[in-house]
Image (tube, rainbow, N blue to C red; front, top):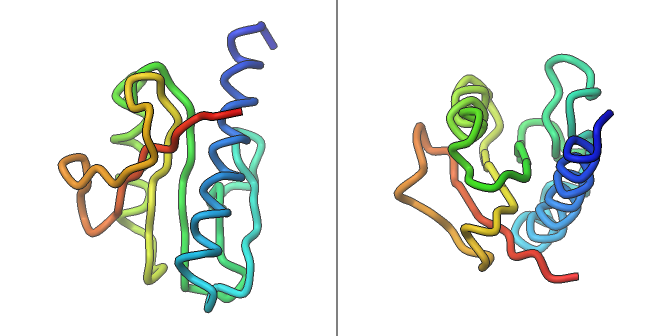
Length: 119
């Protein structure tokens, strides 16, 4: 793995952890979350899934801009076909320095949030 991929994967893990923290606050009925971010997750799983089936599903990533490599578009498409009651995409990007909902980027009832990076 080259250095850029390692940095990207590290920030993707960070996005998943921060997303799970927010989701635990928003959805206590989820009974906790299973995290499996990245390309090595089993096929058919999401980066973040509620332990209670069908409650919450989320994809997470890190990118310079969320449009890079069609990452946001691909995650929105993936989640559009899912049956979880609450579906999200969370990302870390220097272009979006605050944790905030971005309704202008949402599709198919999938909520999109940027996550602030603060060490």
